[in-house]
Amino acid sequence: EGIAYHQQALAIMRELGSTQQMSLIQYNIATCYFENNQLDSALNVSLHSYEIAKKGNLPNELKDVSGLLSDIYAEKKAYQDAFKFQLLHKQLNDSLNNVEEVEKLENVRTRFETEKTEKKLLVQNAKLEQQTTERNALLLGLGFLGIISLLIFRSQRIKAKTNRQLKDAEELKN
Image (tube, rainbow, N blue to C red; front, side, top):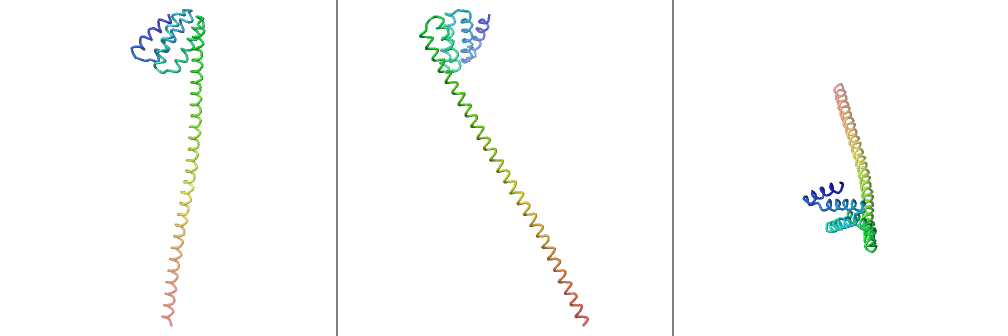
């Protein structure tokens, strides 16, 4: 029953031209045959899945189907073929794990660089804010100094004018 559903899905994927899904579905069909001890059918379908995965350059699917082929050949007592596919399965598994590790390291490096850049931006923003505050304080101080200077100047002018008026008034008295 499961095989029939998989075959229907396979027909749909053939129409859509999805090689990855075709390889995956054939792998699942081959697994069903293998679990039901139908080794010849499992071998034929898994070899077809292997060819599709190989042509489509699908490393995950190649890894899975090569492991299944190794198991099928071992059950059929074809140990050389079983060993060949077991080696391929191991190589692909190691290769895919290495790719994952490299991706993890790249993610860590990218995150580190991002955090470093963010910290740098925070420091620059803090410096800019400090400079803005210092500039504003300087402008405020200069403004107050200007106002005080104007007041002193005005006061001196008024005092000088008053002194002149007093001097003129005294001269007129005399």
